[in-house]
Image (cartoon, rainbow, N blue to C red; front, side, top):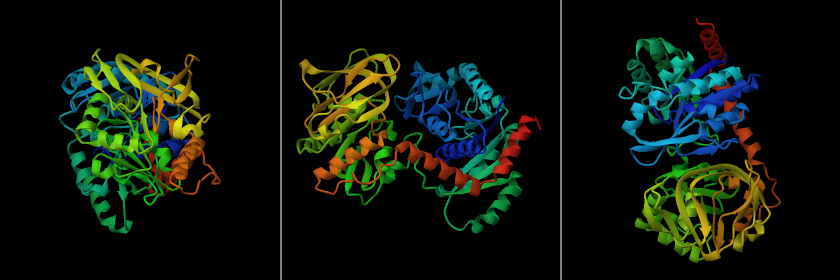
Amino acid sequence: MAKSIMIQGTMSSAGKSLVAAGLCRVFRQDGYTVAPFKSQNMALNSYVTAEGLEMGRAQVMQAEAAGAEPSVLMNPILLKPTSDVGSQIIVNGEVRAVMDARGYFAYKKTLVPDILAAYQKLSAAYDIVVIEGAGSPAEINLKEHDIVNMGMARLADAPVLLVGDIDRGGVFAQLVGTLALLEDDERRRIKGLVINKFRGDKSLLTPGIRMLEERCGIPVVGTLPYLHIDLDDEDSLTERFASGGGDAAGMIDIAVLQLPHISNFTDFVPLSAEAGVHLRYVKRVGELGHPDAVIVPGTKNTMDDLRWLRQNGMEAAVKKLAAAEVPVLGICGGFQMLGREIDDSAGAEAGGCMQGMGLLPVKTVFSAHKTRTRVTGSLCPAGMLQPLSGSPVEGYEIHMGRSSFCDGEGMPFVQLRDESTGTEKADGACCGSVFGTYLHGLFDSSAMTRRFVSLLAEKKGLPLQADTPVLPYAAYKERQYDLLADAIRAHMDVAALYRFMEEAHAGV
């Protein structure tokens, strides 16, 4: 059975996912087979595995760092919020139910066998399992039947690192307060403390670290600097929404609408890696301006988010830009919004029917069936993006609606092949400067993304980037994982981590 180590945090966004990914890469570099694991993830950023099953994006990122094929075993429970108080419950990659928070709190204890079975399969197949917690283990109102923090640490008998975020201030209070709210047996599981996102002179921390260790009796095994590393984010707490991405002074300005229930925003990270591109997220009409392209992203609540766009004036602004021949691209839920009608008579989402933005000649009908499949194909767009025709793409579909052309109108955006069935199909739609598709991962093809950006540059009368070498996005991500591992080795006591795992494995 595998050795294990668990990363817990004093709060959400303390850096658990990043530290876990870094350790996955470090252990892989040291010659071990490694798998990430998070028993329960709450996020709208999801991914479809080769088997057509759904899992959280953070564990996909960590699996990439570990050099392992993503598997739902790494994230057996995924909660996708459908409202402020309810979520779609996905177990072992498939939708099991939709529940409110109170209902799920009572139900989740029945999921322990699923969690334990997934963990045991990973443990039998890998040398090391890096486990990530969620939120904070000190949320005392939620500790009963905990399955993701100390409850998971007990199931795996794993040593725990507790990560605090110094960038938000009060890191010593975070760490001491968290420890104070734990039970004795839980405190004993914490073998090391980690201070994350530090900026400045580390020597100034030394007195505080000494006092922290004396008070807690637990060593500080790492002080990680604030790392500017470009990795997929777990959920909508991402800092990307505030800072955008890419070159802030970039010549090409791409605006992504920051929908209230935005999902799979990692689709657009490759755009921000392109030289000269400023990718920004906007949620107010006054922020939109006159970008070179607008993207309407995926969402877990298509009808609610379309209503939001309509009420705050963003829909009218997007339609005005489209009329001025600014390219508008909708992906998944964004594609559905750009159509003429959304029919949810089956009550799969909000119920009823709703007029779309009317920019694409399609109608979407929702059903309870969720499409989950990996696809490959090539673009076949008309209009301004016609020069992209033939560009190879690959990715996945994950949606609960089917879209079809109205009265035979329209042209598809991409020709796809379903990798699970081998069937070919047309997807998406084009109309003037407006385009839509269900394909997630559209921009993961570096060559296609470069051609897209070059088209925007040409339209703007700017020099093309065609003569600049294209770095495959997969290679770009590999470089980011290596940089993260370098930082872990430089600022954490990796030898101590191996010792913690050995002692736990030996029952010490």
